[in-house]
Image (tube, rainbow, N blue to C red; front, side, top):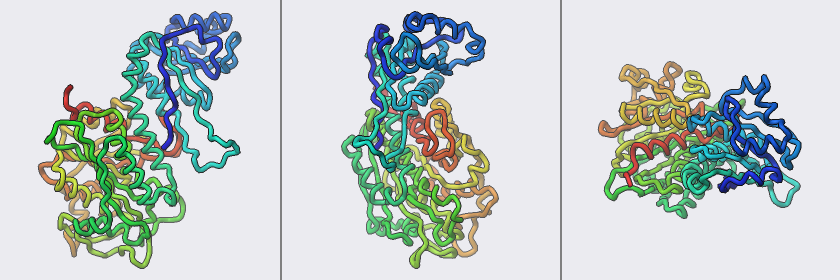
Length: 494
């Protein structure tokens, strides 16, 4: 997977600023106050920093923004990045500032003079999240592909900041894993390759189990198998367990849709834009990245991640519109549209998760509907839940991490839209309330006693424009929010 940019923490030494190569970043408050490092930069540049602070341009800059002085006189660096930051700026503002520095640095090394800022670890997280590229399939003339320039953060309490940054950088690594998986083309990330990459996380202390098609047939996961039966790639379910909490405590279950490529099946999608359907495993990607983050930071919680891996292809063996499939639960499903396949994958895995693990809570993630994009665009995931306490805790976590999420309604009246004439339920109710009826379908496979959230991430998993923390493409949305939820609601106190 993509490597995080190396970030080192050193005790502040302003004498290194003059000779530092690449870029040097210093902090100035919005009212123009200079700390010792900024004052040294001002002397090195013969007053250029003071002139900037006194300029009209500086008066219009908000906290968290960066102004760059190119090729500063008296310094070896190619740029002096002036980070305007209020002393009491919230954590999310420092992350965005770090991301802004990472965007500017490119392949160059970066030296950040963080002074005594108590939240400097958040700067490191912002840098790590934004300094990402997916270029493994691009040819290069270099014998060794380029590695992003290292980052050094100078701080008055370097050891404390380094310790604070360690669990945050675990989240960044999890987000990078999610992005790698979502960005991979489908001829590379087959169901087998996906499962193999998840199995590699056993080295981190996760228990990983791969259920093959014969095991799925024995379990009765017929709706999941129906999605992949037109493909040469075998369908699989991968179970990842992290047992960091108390023995016997029920786990939180995370369930992800992992359609490695979605043609729509017999209900074939239009050709235009179909190449984007490599990201239809985004829910499984977020589950994988979250499990990696939890293992890396040794979370004191029991969490199980389950992903259903399939490929939805048209062929002579593919499921047809009008077919009736019996789910693992025993509920019969009339397939109206084979392009509404994600819910067929999830319903069996949700039921299996409850039957086997009896979870304390369950959250599924899926790039499930285009309707959620129409409703919420690319700024928010759709949140559906049967439990206010769990839902509100997640929304709080998402807000704290800067990941957009908006609660959507559920209600029995929507069940009328997915009634089937010949089976217990049909897999789509058409265009009206499309994301809601998809959630209502999944709700049929959630037991009354199970607190549950469904996250429709179709609009946020991969985007055409850069975000605050990611270049365009896969975002890694959800890893930070789920990690925070586990930390705040499910971890055992020390």
